[in-house]
Image 1 (cartoon, helix red, strand yellow):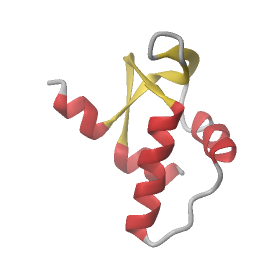
Image 2 (cartoon, rainbow, N blue to C red):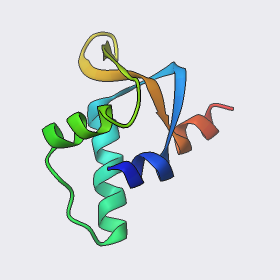
Image 3 (tube, helix red, strand yellow):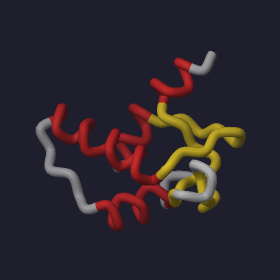
Length: 79
């Protein structure tokens, strides 16, 4: 998970993303790397240990997410 965070994420205090979207990117990262992904609960817990993220509702309150993190590809798309 630390490798995923280092390679695919960026700390950004203005960004928010759903845990589901982060986990989907993580699972894809693992498949591409030839690794088996851990479950979503373990992923969420271990990812929070990588940075100072705030839990919050995203997508209009419909999903659980994190504030303070963005996927590199999404951050690049918004610039």
